[in-house]
Image (cartoon, rainbow, N blue to C red; front, side):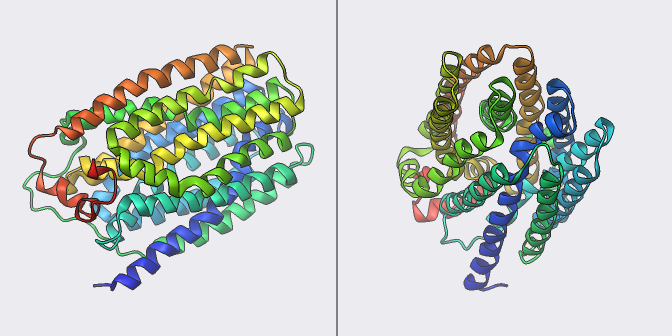
Length: 423
């Protein structure tokens, strides 16, 4: 049994190493579509399809990851995913032809099993007096600090006419992945052993109507956030509007800087609002954000595009700050402990599904001159998702006789009264 101080030190090590890993990711992944197009001379739709292939692998990896968490523990699954991520960096580094890039993208996509496993592993390791919402709020802030540094560094260092500048950053990503993997191994492998006569299954998890509604919400939210942001905005700015990576970097860096500065007050706001209103607000904010880039249809000088991108990134970041403290706690509140891996696996699957559709939709739209129709569609989907979030929140508020496991799994916030359950 580990002491409270020891457990805080262990989860803190995960947070600290997440910063460099996020920096490494921020330095390369926003520019991957540009690297494929300009340095490796691939068409925009083909490059977008390669990026989307990662999402296909994540679909399978998410379901496999949920099983691994329940059978072998979240800590071990997170460490395995990080090792696969290092391999993914290496394969992108070595690839020169479209088939090899597809293989690299598939491998890297499977590494995403670490995300849900990481959240389960750290939530299992938290002392009971440390609210999960507070921890994940600070964790998100640290990751974004790293992403800000990485995005700016990548934009300043990458020369699309010299592929070696991108490849060097991939090597840095491998080293940061090794540090993160070592930190995961410090966590206890708290594998839940159930006395239930029936083994956990995805079919059993899907009998929960609240989980099914959450998965629909998660797909739409991912499609209107990261699935479209990571590839769509670089494609719009760098390919359709012919702006340099430096413009993208400066615009993008506004997002994580604001998150670092404002995450704490936004967390306090979320704590007062509760799950239902936060889910609804998050969906609305992500939808509204996509209206801002529409202005580039009328004016696209470098200065105007930079200001427009900074406003977009700021609004987008507010949506991230609203959702980050509750994303994991919502699932912890929904999931019986014996099915926790399955619930998180399905959540990751829903986001991966959006990550398949998002990059393909964005790059096809940009490649065929339909970028502004695509932006309007994202806004409409965000508005629709707000009503789904409201319905999900109401179901969570009015749940009848929640299972003891579900209550236990979210005991941190229930005991302290700190967090969205206080609503």
